[in-house]
Amino acid sequence: MHDGALVSLEKNLRYGKDSLGGLLTAGNGTPLPTRADPEADGLTARLFDLARSGDTVRLAGFIDAGAPPNLADEKGDTLLMLAARHGHPDTVRALAARGADPERANDRGQRPLAGAVAGKEGGVVRALLDAGADPHAGSPSAVDTARRFGRTEFLALFDETAPPPV
Image (cartoon, rainbow, N blue to C red):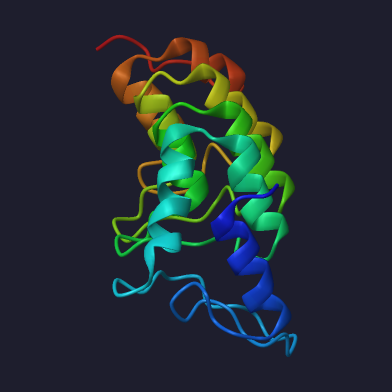
């Protein structure tokens, strides 16, 4: 990938500089913080835009070059959450394959799987399940969300049944 921003990121990673507004370290092996700095340069915003638009190849290139796969915005929405919310199963799969956590909730406690169920995103639901997302985790869980919105097709995927009629 010969994108100018990617080249800049790779160069900064090589020299231990921070190109993502405080998100990367000089390679000392400690876990990387993954909360975006609102004052960060345009690269961070670009990563979120790539997740929202489902530009899987370019986003994967940035992750492969060292961008944190669990990068989160100021609301706690991760790259995976944004890709899921906007209906991009291939991007969800690529992020999960690169270490993005399918269980990570945002600041409101929302998880990607419950959001995908609410949005009727079947491909995303399957991608998240394949990545290990737990349909019973969270509040509301994906199971709770499927029951609430009558998404019986997802309940079947979760090996659940709809509640009896009241």
